[in-house]
Length: 203
Image (cartoon, rainbow, N blue to C red; front, side, top):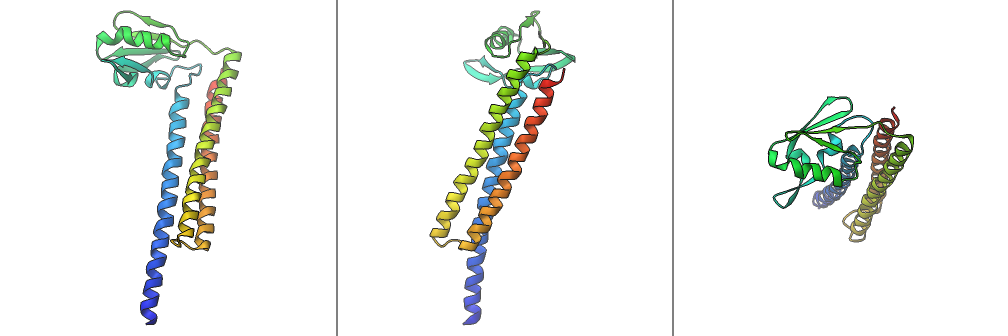
């Protein structure tokens, strides 16, 4: 009788562990996604140096479909302040040029009929300050996204506790773990932001 009850308790504990582990895993995956989205977003904010990331995600109309420039051309950096865009299909040259002019990059493409050269002018002090402000806004959006993940999953955990899928003690421990995870990812976001800020302020 005792062994049977112990086996039931053990099975219940194992179920609780799985529920909590899965919840923490989901939180981590979603928070990682928020950081990744931020990194991709910040890569598109131009600094005084040439970097393919500035234009890689630029959407270009290709056969009626918006397509990232990265899929339509090779992008290289022949000089510190120059980007060279070589389309795989020469017919897209004009469309790529139009997309660059229509974007908020503030860059003028030089099209020689084969490739597009983009000269990256040094940033003015005012433009640097505007970009830093923009970075701060993106960072805050990411922090909010990470905190929202925590909020959603704490809600789930409390629901599990109400349904007796996990105990009150386990709920407390899981909440603490989620809080630590949130703090870790917010630190990562801050670090990504500091790095971008340094890039922008570099003369």
